[in-house]
Amino acid sequence: MDFRNRLTEHYGFTEKDWNETVRRFVPEILPARTLFLEKGQVSTRLAYLRSGLMRSFIYDDNASDITTQFFKEGSVVISMKSFNDQVPSWEYIITMEDCEVDVITYERMNELMEVVPAWQQIAKDVDEFKYNALMNRTIQLQTLTASERYQLFMKKQPDILQRVALKHIASYLGIDIATLSRIRKSI
Amino acid sequence: MDFRNRLTEHYGFTEKDWNETVRRFVPEILPARTLFLEKGQVSTRLAYLRSGLMRSFIYDDNASDITTQFFKEGSVVISMKSFNDQVPSWEYIITMEDCEVDVITYERMNELMEVVPAWQQIAKDVDEFKYNALMNRTIQLQTLTASERYQLFMKKQPDILQRVALKHIASYLGIDIATLSRIRKSI
DNA sequence: AGCATTGTTTGACAAAAGTCAAAAAAGAAA
DNA sequence: TTTCTTTTTTGACTTTTGTCAAACAATGCT
Image (cartoon, rainbow over all chains, first blue to last red; front, side, top):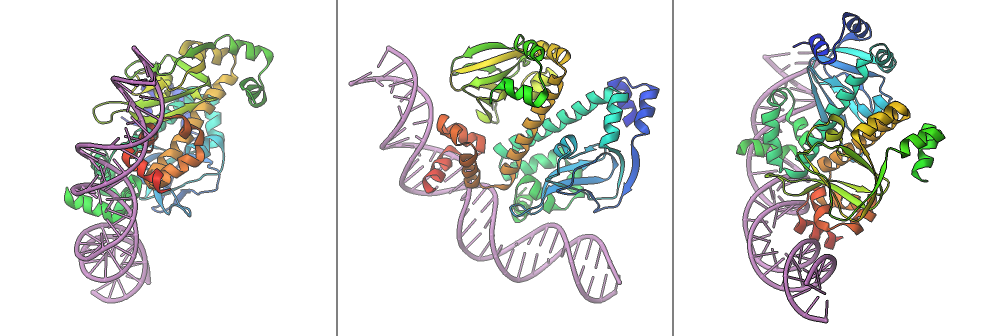
């Protein structure tokens, strides 16, 4: 099911709602390895990822290039804290493949929530969805061994596994790349 | 600064706002080791913790009694997914000390958000605060060693460290209790 | 195609963390 | 206080994971 049908079905979108929505999202093509958000900058845009793959990561003295999230087609690409509170981002977001996105700015999103109140609910639902995903991830890091975490990832996100460098999977799972290599051999 | 002042200062509460709020929160005393929320039940209430200490934990075939959060005085005690979406909880919440709480039900909270619109913002802020806390925790689990996690906990939450059994700290940090004991000795 | 760069695997080893069981310590209850 | 229960520590050991460096493989670029 495509985006429009989802909105109609879940949120009772009318023709007008859809039009108001569409006019505020700007389609863009982002080549692979384009930064969508930089650390330190206030996130001004949110994207719906039509096709392609992106990831968020942190990079500082303590932690060099640690992937914190993967975004695949159909996902909402957002750095929640920075976008919602309009504060500087502590993470980067970058494309890993050429991406087709529909982008909306913070201002336009606020307009949209006024014009189409259903968007308030959608925003809330997106935030909740992200919260739940993060909670699952946290519990996995808290309770599973490196090998178990990898096997679960393999099972739940086989598609991403095919598409990204292993070093990113490793950092996402909190495993050393050499260890991950050995885990893979042993399965 | 107490609760009332915080609301007045941050959200411009009027006398009336405060009265509408107060009448919907019910003060309660919960003895130590009282379940505030059980797994499988839909969370109907949220508490403001005036004094005492609580924790949330999961308990199932895979994971027996894994602490997922500590709540201390001044915190909002809530199982976000269950309360916000009114779905069965996947976690328990239990008091660890005698607790003084102000409790509000889901229905009353919705009323309150209508009568005092500032509460919509407060609810949003609480959710965001919890999300950020969870994000920090996740990154710690992802990037720090057991020893580093413990030392950080010691530094950031020395009060909780004094008040709860080490086995709960251990499970919260994803460390075996015997290992934690050795880490403590070595510092 | 050829070279440079980046990513992955491997070996040899070290360090970190877990397991199991028993002893010691601390707390709760009669 | 004494007993019972729970929690914490410890020892002996195993397993898991990380580190460093080199070799190997894959990929991108000119």
